[in-house]
Length: 136
Image (cartoon, rainbow, N blue to C red; front, side, top):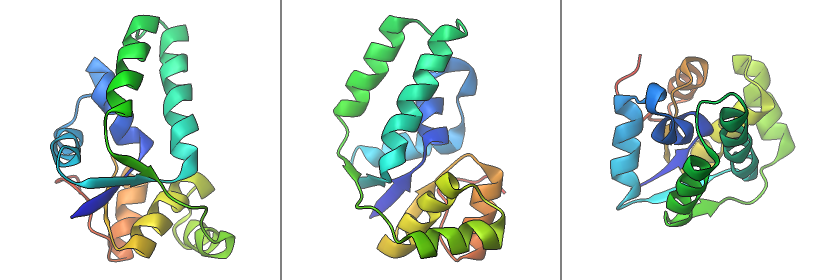
């Protein structure tokens, strides 16, 4: 099996105060399954780590360790999606374009979605996309 990983799950792996059982499940699955992300995930994760440094939540060393660990995962950056499809999902579910891109990728590739974002998880379920974990 394979799944789409969003930034909320990724970040929870590296911020001690954001640990979540659904993110832990995605981490376990990433050891044996293909993981896909939209291109903006790369920027989103790094920006969040940088903001964590600036706010004193993590150190530069912590960011380096996190990026090293991420580089060891078999993460595939997916090709750019069709704008029309992403916009339609964003409009239908009142999502940001960024979040709708995660959902569109999961739909297109028929993959589960790993997210801690409740609005995105709800939209995914409405679109018949399986969400990793137990969050409502």
